[in-house]
Image 1 (cartoon, rainbow, N blue to C red):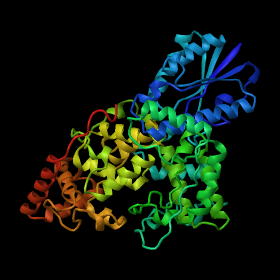
Image 2 (image 1 turned 90 degrees about the vertical axis):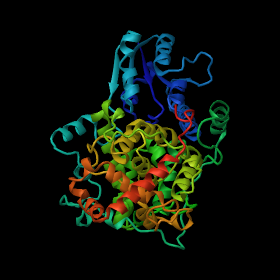
Image 3 (image 1 turned 60 degrees about the vertical axis):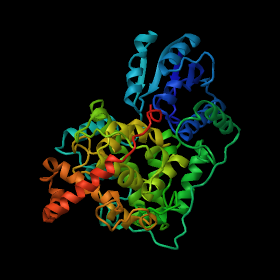
Image 4 (image 1 turned 180 degrees about the horizontal axis):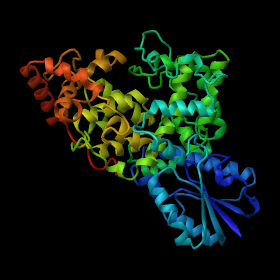
Length: 516
């Protein structure tokens, strides 16, 4: 009566629900490297290395702890290339009587799992993914009771549920729920930035890197200096290093951008969390404990915890609430193809070039680069949101559809029509100038409003507002923006729109080979 337990590449947790309360003597853990998962989009080379290496390390840990593991490698000549094909082969190979699996993170995988019972002719037990703090059912219940899906109220509920940064009488630590206004400092000269703890490749990772270079060398990204944590123990060391070396200043400078500084005070723990090497609760608890011990200020601890138990949990709930329709949402009717420089980084805009360079080299850019540079430009330019979503899914090591799609379609592109965010996250060159040192190094002049030498964000910003005036003029959070537009002369308005049009007409579209 063998129980087959498929463990997917983002379920690398020893306390995974499907592994709990199981008689190991009758269980076989199935782990699968399949072509379908590496190529449904042309993932960043680093991302493929990370997932496959972490999977292989996890399989060894399971074997060491007494589990029987059936591991199918990507280069196995009998590999069918898909989860469903490999599950069917494993059922036949082990004469399995049942399948036990944790619910997947992505809609397309859930669709595949739904077919296993009929395809294999045995029962399939789908366990809730209890590594998340908020279940999909809990989020649906929360959403149904509200007129708007306001993240702040959800975040407060998660604080109450976990007890993190809460006083004994149920109040938020420091008397305030959200300290984001303290976390918007511009970069300062003379600041020394720590770097994430590196983990040089061992034999397993080196073998995977060779495989990826041979099979996926034409994908976006670089493999040089790969040093991400690929085991639970490494991930916990990386967490401890972040708490000790970076969290204290994380809050103050979390929105800043500095040329040549790839990490600033950011944790770069999201790949480990999204793989399952760390749980969101242990990460958030470590930050709360550091505050309680007097090691970090409240604004840093709160800002970091908000990202982990607030935003991350929220977008996962939103994803399952809105799928599959949200994947094709395009409320602003954006149709422009993605520009080529998203792949090459070849642009005179230093902010864009730096974000793409960091993305290409590391599969990483922090949230402001993703939202207010890369995402902001695409929305202002009217790029088709599905192309933007594909790019983000390809480009980032921590990108899985459940977290990437809501951030792109809902947050950065406003393509869901305001279901996630009440206003578009649009900004001109002044914002980037305030939050970075990029503009002083740029070939464009951020203080010039229009013309070929002006920062493109300036004209694109006003052109965006003009194009979508019918949608946004009555938005209470955008009244001041349109009041400023109304104060301009018709000639000034025309100048912005003409400059934007000239810049957009000159954009080179991306080659189709990059994403799918």
